[in-house]
Image (tube, rainbow, N blue to C red; front, side, top):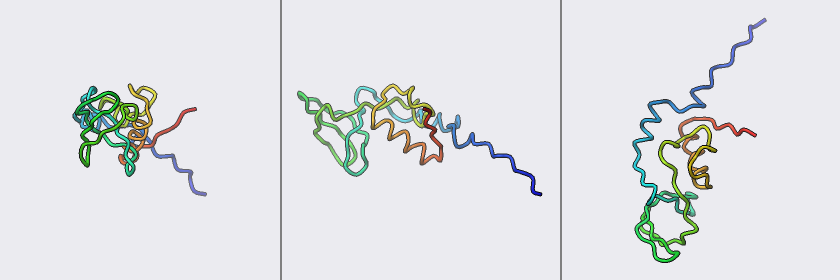
Length: 116
C-alpha cells in the first residue's frame, strides 16, 4: 500500500516575498494626484489629476487626458498595500483597489483566501 504523501507547503502561493515587497514599494505614488479612472476595456486604470474645475476633473492616463466627473474617480492605495494578503487593512477599500489587488496577486501566482 502506498504511503500518503504530505501536502506541500502553500506559503509561496499565499505570501508576498520580501524581495517583491521591496520592489513594489519603489513604485511612484502621489496620494493627492493618483486616482483610479473608469475604463471600458480594463475596468479601471491609474491616472494623475491635472486640474479640477467644479465637479469635472482632467486626468492624465494611458491613452491621453480625459475629463471625468469627480465622483467617478477612486483613490489609489499606497504601494505598501500592493498584493496585500488582507485587503481589509487597505487605506482605500474601493472597487478599483480590490480588483487591482486581486489581479496583481493572480499574475504573481498568489492565492487570495476570502475569510467569512
